[in-house]
Length: 255
Image 1 (tube, rainbow, N blue to C red):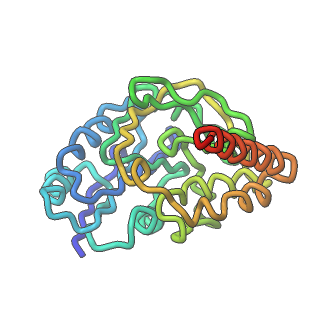
Image 2 (cartoon, rainbow, N blue to C red; image 1 turned 45 degrees about the horizontal axis):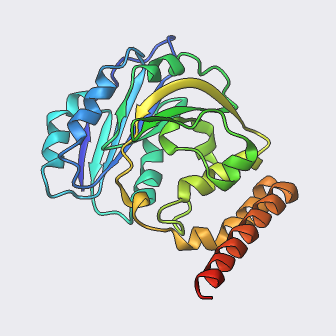
């Protein structure tokens, strides 16, 4: 295991609450420096960067070594995938707030604007991202959250969530979706939307190409457990309707 320890982007004090930004990498040399630069350019003065690398072989480690003085902690070792790496990162959290950023994503100036509005330590704040040139997703309803979820790069979490929860490694692609469902039900927390665009989200990773079948198998149960019968029934009706319509179209084409 290679470990690099730098420093906070600012020293501790009585100023704004500290945010730990976690980046998970594997062979990310083409994008990582741009991602890091987008953090360095932020106006918010209290950010710690934590990078968990999966033993890259493409130059990623050299980039991390060159940035060690500006990265609070980075490690490089083999891991069990994205969410295993995220779980590893949790023990290095230094701040009151936690944000997960993809190595091929870039923060926008609005991230700092949102950061200054993080005042409720029982709130999960979410905003918007730019994806394929479009603003996503605006304020969402509980039903939409259950059915579709929230872009991971749109969310800033209070660190206290991760004292009681970690990502479920059963879900290799949608563990963040499952965690957000659990947080919705948790009476200790609530969601607050802010109309900022905080990240350019590059949806080219594993979630763009791989279906998380264990999550899809459990999704209806997760909705019932975390959102209640009414939202579950609406979801199931829409699922049934979609399957019925697809079957009907298939029958017509075979006549």
